[in-house]
Length: 223
Image 1 (tube, rainbow, N blue to C red):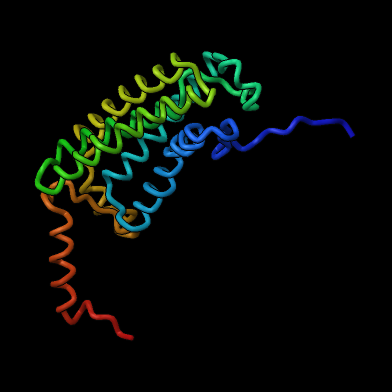
Image 2: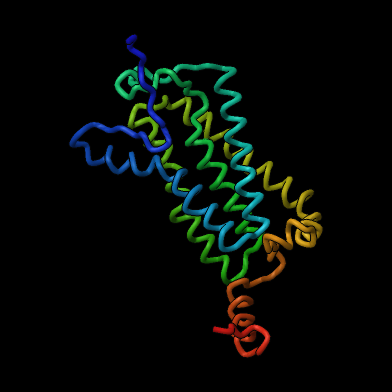
């Protein structure tokens, strides 16, 4: 039987030097895009089904497709440490992790600024104190762990920031005018798709309506 080299699934396949506590921490940081995708956007669709969130996720998906097209076209090698990491069979420019995080950080910040009110001031604080530091740490983690060069992560971050801003403009200047039609479509009604962009305080609105609905006999459950 001939020896066939094995290839790892790289979704969570992050390596660091044994005993390196900083490397261990940064290895977890580099998994933030995975946590955002599965813990954030999938749960968002399951429980919220907001059009803004859905188009946010779609933009990230388009951004990652663009990243793969560029990587395949340019075919720039990863740094020499790819031998230890068993990653030399993939390309490094631009960094998809950096691109993902900076797309996310820019879009999230612009969306929060657009809806700035008493509730979203706390969300902006969340962006400044958590989202942007995580984005910058992700850049550092990919270089520190040996997966990318500095140029590769900066290329990814720049492209991600540009695409995040551009997609935000597309969604909120062009696509948003069709949100009502999507809500009223058969698809929107079946999956309970909604847009609460025009409601200043969504939490207060849902809280008050949930309390009002509990008092209405037509909403009461029959056990």
